[in-house]
Length: 443
Image (tube, rainbow, N blue to C red):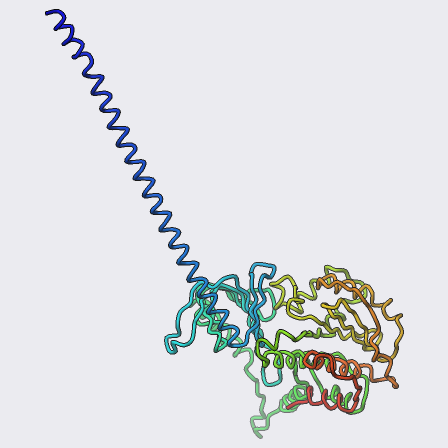
C-alpha cells in the first residue's frame, strides 16, 4: 500500500513538471509562429517597398525618356553632370535652366500631345526689346515647364532676383511665373506711387492779366536736354557722337565695340539653335566677352578679382562653377591698352592662344599680356599649350582703324564656327563701318 502511495506520490510530484514542459513547449511554438509571422510581414513590407521603388524608378525613367525626346525634338541642348547644386543645364536661345531631376510629368489640359514637366530648378531668362536691350529674369523654385512653347513658369514657393544680380527681389509665393504680392505690400506700393505722382506734379506759373506762362523757357530747356540724342542699343548708351566717329572714320570707343560683341553673340545663338540637334554637335562655339571685362580688371588684379568679374559678367553660368568650356570651345576678348585696340583669341579645346594685333606682328605683345592670359586661363580652367601672334596681324596702315580691324576680325571668328574654318580672312573697312553704323543707329 505504501508503494502505491509512493507511486501515486511520485506521480503527483511529477505532474507539475510535465505541465511545465508542455507550457514551455507551447510558448516556444507560439514564439516561433510569432517570429515567423514577423519575418513574413517584414519580407512582405520589403517586397512592397521594392515594388514601389521599382515603380518609381520606372516612372522616373519614363519621364526622363520623354524629357530627352522632347528637348531634342524642340531643339534644346542639355549639358549633364555639371558641378554645383544642380546636375544638369538645359539651353536654348536666351534660356538657361538648371535642374537635377524631373519630379512629375502630366499632359497639357488643352493639348494632350504636349507634356508638362514639374521640376525644381533655377531659370535664367533674357528678353530683348526692339533695340536689343536685355531684360533679365532670374528665378528659383518649382517650375511647370512646357518645352514646346518655351514656358518655364515658377509655381509655389520660390525666389526672384533683381535683374542680372544675386540680390533677391521677391521671396514667397508665385503663380504662373509671377510673384503674388501680399496685401500689405500692395498698399505700400500704391502709397509710394501716389507720393511719386504728387512729387512729379508740374508747377505752372502764368501772368494773371495776359495768361502767358512764365516758366516755358525752363520747360523748353529741359526738353532740349532730354533730346540730347542719346539712346540705348545693344545694352550700350549711344549718341550722335558715336555715329560721327564712324561716318568720319575716326578711332572708335568701347560702346561701339561692345554693341557689336552682343550683336555677334546673339547672331551665333540664333544660327546655332536654328541647326538640327545632330548638326549642332559638330559646331565649336565661340563666346565674345565685352571690353568692359578687361577694362574693369585694370592693371593690378589677381585671380580673385578676375573670378568675381567673370562671375558677374557670366552670371548665367555661375551655377555651373564657370565650366563654360562645356558649352563654348572658343573665346574672344577685345582689349584696349593705351588707346589701342587688339584682340585675344582663346581656343580652349586646342589649348591655343592667339593675339590679333593690327599694328604689329611682334611676339613682344605676349610679354605685356602674359599675366592676363594666365589668369583668364586659370579661372576658365583652360590648359594653354601654345601661344602665337595671329597670322593676319600687322595690316593696319593708318592711325585710327585698330577698332575696325578688331570688329572685322571678330566677325571672321564668328563666321568660322559655322564654315568649319574654310573661310579666308579679308579686311573690309568700308563694310565693317557700314555694319557698325547700322547696329548703333536709331531705328
